[in-house]
Length: 505
Image (cartoon, rainbow, N blue to C red):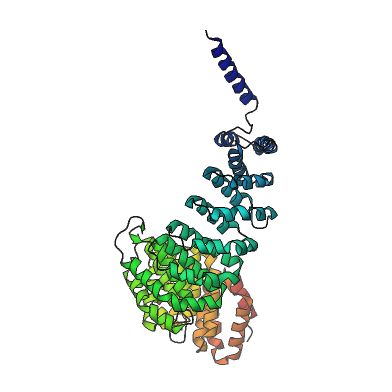
């Protein structure tokens, strides 16, 4: 037997023995550490495993173990996500970022975004590395730097590196332009004074064909509108035509598998553009008039039997309600909400009720046409939908429809859930008091409510009823007979008995 073979076997046995005795050395792979943590049965065991692993990583950092630096950083990120302190590894991120290779930079930037935030002073040390990487010849390294800058840059870093980002927005590579636009969003948020530097660039990006670049450009335009009134006016003059073109192109585009979601062409771009249109058209009649036709097209052509289509329709309705739209377009939007109320999805119905509550101040007559459907929502099995629909019905009540609506609510009071009766009773009493043109009608409604839900009637309502009966001598006999009849039928209503004793004529 060759003696060299015996030597190799001895080395392997010694290494295996060392790993068995110390499985948490800095050379442990990430998957092995994760497996050891998941195997822990108690929190104390987990803390012990993490403590030993952190000790090994600290030892590797002190010994300047460059070969395993990226592996240690990956383990630190996992430990950080578990909620344990990892501040001692922050400088390792900077060392990895300063490395020449892409794999080291990738793990370094990922650790930078995860382990640090803009409040850390050590972040200022990375500004020079970021500037170098933003000027790197490798587009993937440029993308890493843009991604990191867009996630954690502070106001100081934004001011220092804004010129580099502006230059990259003119790049020929679509992926670089997209990342630069998203990074600009963060810069504008941190330093609104820099908004004017990005207005022209944002408007020019709206002419691109790549959907990723378009979505990023639209998001940047939205942030510019929030940051500066000058930017808002500039984009109104220079972007509205491009936005209408984008929306028309994406609405009429043929099937494209890379942008298709459940048969709808790029709903994300649809929604971003509609949100920006809402900001530009709000309070501006000329902008609103220019976008009326395309909004009508989107509202009529988008399919409502798919969730992606409903998301587009929702944003389209929000935009129509938010701009200076024509009355016909608003009626179209409210009719879409009426269709939403008949949807089986509770979320869609709840959203429709929310918007209708705001739409009633804009076009109450159009909302009134859906009164029957709204009343059906009051009887819905979902408690949140019932409550929101009841609030909307209360807003719909006027002098012409108060009697039929009150009758519907009183009839439902007989079969309503006990948890819902308090809200329903309060609304009926408020309607009866607010629209009581005839005292006899008011008394009839109140007696019905007392009979059906006397325990839920508040004291101030009782006092108001007593005052009305006391001041209407011609109706006191009628009131006594009605109260006595109801008291005989519903003697178990404790509050009702109390009220009968309080009424003295």
